[in-house]
Image (spheres, rainbow, N blue to C red):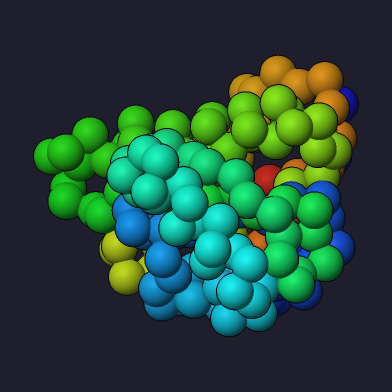
Length: 172
């Protein structure tokens, strides 16, 4: 059974085997969690992302790719591109589900046992935080795993933290 944890803080400080980066399609860094991971993780992550981009043309919304952890205290980073919210006119709900499914699949394929997720698409991409939290939790609970034994949801703000706490029924 997968143990689910919830914390409020900075995903770049976590000691898990893999963290998930809410990336953009270029994979070259950006704002929010993406910028923080690239800044703290160092140039190695950027070089690996450039190699991926040169090979396959970036990363499409809902898909995921994997790199080393660079200077971060993790083995790997999974970069996934969340959807921009447009009242679900562009199938954003299913694209966000795919972010979690593809990230978990990559962790499983790489035999990684612990994974941490940020709140994908809830910042500048404006995905409603309550919907995003439900999708994240449901996709993690639904995923069948052999290797993953711990999933950490890392919330940067109080609003997301409180939503996850309520949905996970954590007392704290």
